[in-house]
Image 1 (tube, one colour):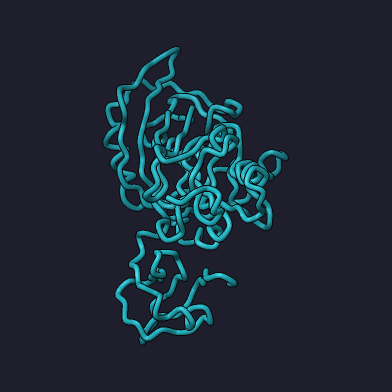
Image 2 (tube, rainbow, N blue to C red):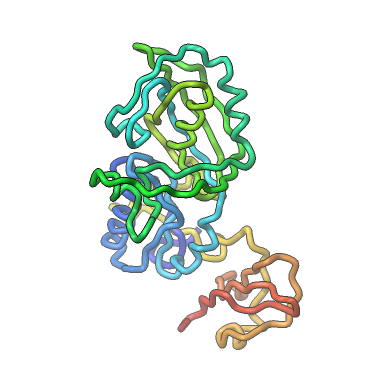
Length: 294
């Protein structure tokens, strides 16, 4: 970990409910007094949990993190659905069902590749507008092709509880980039023969970053935080000592170095990230150079 006052790295934030990812970026820009803040994948306004923010040069490595697998703990309420597919929306359908004997079998059917159509209330853009902008204005929401998602572990946490004809339970899922947990809950309910919405969603992990390593907004206010260093943030990439190649790296030149991985990180003698290079047939070429002055 690196001290927060270095201002180049990743900030792991425990996003509270009620704030958009953009709101969190704006908060950090103001608190850290820098415009160079970005995020590696949004969270719904009503979701909480791990939001990975890039600070300073950290914004330049976010694209290497957006495809990371993410893990969620969430609650599903069966037999009632809403226009937003979560607890904040207007009720659109209620359906009686008290047979959940196929629940685990249906959950397993989602593991692996899963074709998911994004929900109407989402930030997916069509013709320059986000889907929720069409929905909120009462306009017809354009059709969006289903997207191929990968679902890893999908499990139930505890038994279902019933109240006034509704069944509620806690669940856990690991999924690839682009997974909408609200839509997964709705699709699961449809397979069982009913409808559903989520009553909470909490992202517990993004890539290798767990919720336990995240900072609250209150901690940021007090200055009680650290940043993940650039080189550590890309620990999943093989490392090459870049000290002998510094001049060539700074000039963005090809290096005749054989590697197996599609991308590698080059670091100096102190472990500071110099650049990310991409594999080509006869060596590696620069993709992102982070040396001083770049």
